[in-house]
Image (cartoon, rainbow, N blue to C red; front, side, top):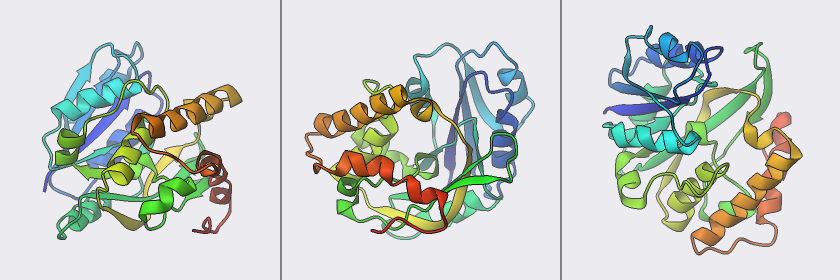
Length: 252
């Protein structure tokens, strides 16, 4: 089973080696790695060219993160697609082999696992542990969502349900997973282990202004899909981050 991994980058010379190395070291024999770079003025593209496992490097201006992801989706040929950004890396070399083994099981259409946020420079320091837990249909109304970097789905569903909606600048990943898993009931399998480690940071958490904008886009995601969240849904979503700082799981 071929798995396509899409990595989006911009001025990522300081971090992308870890991303590329983590894919290159995967034991799964059928991995297609596509890197979409936004014409970075730093050394990002040069670093990518040093990794012969990369199947396709496209370096040109784009209209933002999700536009670049859609470019990668258009190029992907694997039966299963995952996204791994240039600040992220797989937790061990068997991740994609275990993902592939799950997709070989009957009925598995989408899969996700756990994620750890690590210190930007001291990668052994775990700052947050996102235990996603098994998915049940009402969970999105309780503020739940899976960690997007751990989300794998059959290419068929992108072709059927669409790619990232570019009306969303900060929450297109949330909107896509809401559309796939909640609105259209794509079956999702939970793999209970850490699949991805992510350097702490990110634009949606950079300031209260960005957080408020992301909150507004979360609400827009429900409206755009003709769905009605509960009155508590969008307030529970950020509150679910608090237990990630401690060794227990948010009660379901």
